[in-house]
Amino acid sequence: MQVRIFEASDMASGLKMVRQELGADALILSTRTVKNGKLGILGKSIFEITAAIDTPWPREKKSGQASVYQEPAIPQAIQAGSSINCTVGDSPETYEAFRSSSPSRSAHGHAREAAEQNSAPETDIRLEIDELKNLVKSLAGNIALINQPKDEPQASLSPTSEPQTRLQNRLQAMRPPADHLIEYLLDYGIDLETAKTMTEFARESLTGPELEDPEIFHAFFRKTIQDLIAVNPPDFSHSGSQYRLALIGPTGVGKTTTLAKLAAHYLSRFSHSIALITIDTYRIAAVEQLKVYGEIMHLPVEVVITPEQLDQALFRHQDKELILIDTAGRSPKDSLCIEELATFLRPELGIDKHLVLSATTREAELFDIIKRFDRLGIDRTIFTKVDECSHLGALLNIQIRSGKPLSYVTNGQRVPEDLLQITKENVAELIMSKHEGILHD
Image 1 (cartoon, rainbow, N blue to C red):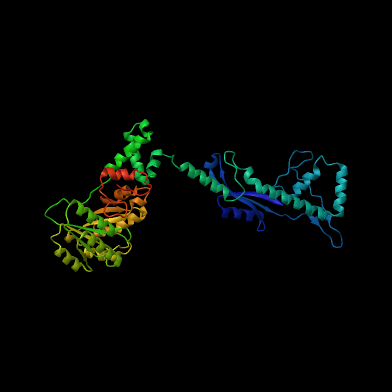
Image 2: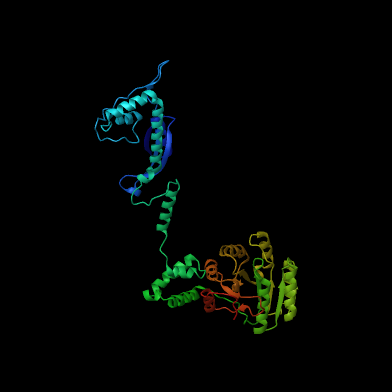
């Protein structure tokens, strides 16, 4: 058996070399990718193929006579008594010549071997070939470990383990060192880009010891959020003009309950001059719910189905100081329904449109909701269900991305208690606090 190692730039070129040198019957023992040159792992990658082929054993047969083994001639490169060892790449003839010429073999050994060869030459030859095959397979299986650079970790014989290990090492090297300030902000739900910006500002503003003091950098981040957040609740203290406010948003965010909280808040702070209008005719329960709230607070409730009916309702209640309009929940992906809602909330009606969002919704979906409802002309945002969240960094993240100011935050189902009158300070406190359980004033 002949064993050869071929080096090529790719698999196709390597296989072509194997076929040219050893023929179509060659056996591929192993393949691997190695780095060439003095630069080690920085050197050029080459493809290494270890291949072998059986060579016919030289013997002559004559008709009617037993096969007689012909002793091969000893190559000139191998002299009696030399220290040359046979390698995997040597041919069977070279191996046999070296064995026969070894000075350690006695005359008695030669005579005994000649007798054995004369009795059963073909059997012994085949056994030696099989033994050599087993040796070649053993060496080929470990050749990757033998030639592996010393500075690389030992890998298993699995063909995929070495690339995976190198990929993991490279990813580990690319990973930036942990920043305790960034990790601190991420723990409060603030997104990575905002956390990086706030951390850079902190390193410019605080000293080294202050950056290591949790109380100091916590207070600094809370103050920074106060400067970043925009809070703009409606101004109900106006006089002489009617204020119109509509709540829009996806289904299930609590628009009707929030509308009732706003009505109760206005009743307790200002006057009873309020009218409730609903165009949520898709859910019978929503209409009934608003009517119940209206009866409790002794407020008129109008149900409209068309834009013309909305105009008529606004005209009938033109003497009211505050008009609160409830709308049906719309899927952000239902463009047709959003366009239909736009025919009700026309710009010339002077309606202040508040987008109601649930704090429990994933941020990616919140961004998509804002983008799709923005065609209605969103003026402000309201976040509900903050009592169900442990992290409220989304309040800052959404505002930075959308630019829409925050008007209200709700933290429960109670009417009117669970409507927070927000300021920059208490919103920053909400974001930079750990919440466990229900939040109430």
